[in-house]
Image (cartoon, rainbow, N blue to C red):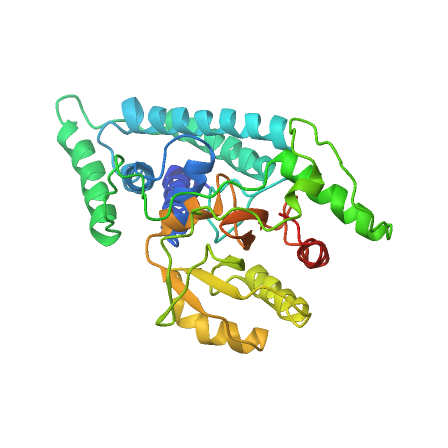
Length: 364
């Protein structure tokens, strides 16, 4: 028993080290998912997200290493780790109040082990308890033997590894990716127009009416005509499978998919079904540069191929998708005007029946 008690602090150290190392590895694959989470939280923009994401993961790696050594273990390493977990708990508490305790993935273990905010908070509280136990049962090195350089070396070496193994191209803020800036999804006013028209179709009311929309002075009847051609946020993409295409001319369906995304494949299957109707606009896919080798399998599964282009820069892809948006993205455009946009799998998820009715009604 005495021998077991003697080894408990070491066992606790190994457990804590493994937790932080697992968290770091999980956030790194894919690292763009962690970057997107930081952007969605409003902490950074896409230009600074690559830096902060790697520094945070490096900190977790450093803690995983630092907890196993004795330089300033009690006076610095353990307190800073408790402080970090406490900050995470406060953040999780805010998320639970705003979005619910069991909604979403906190991202603590990336996409590898999805955890709700409540589960993550419980995990952090248990880890803090283990750290408090460790604080009471370990000691720093003898006075004069603690080396600050060891702590700095552990972190800077961890950071070096992150930037070395996960390189990226810095973006120029002043350019703001002018070739393909972010799209703006349909506004509440535009959604109101669409909802009104869809309801009128369902009620078999074919008479044109001068509907007035809140916050909009434009009547619905006025936007039934062919809209004026404008330059869309997709205008920079003109090469699909080697063929030149003007996305701002006529009606187009632009999809933002990830080759390995199951929800994207389901959305593509729905598009294949509704595209069999007459006068359905041509479909073009913008794939994110993630698992591009799965593109042939993507088209095999949906049983039809569409012209596509792979966007190499992941931040650009998500800027096109929209703030806080996620895949699959489906956008219906007419002469460059965005008529209806869908994203994600929640409130704004792709609705093939609604889209069919909107296209049939010749909205805007």
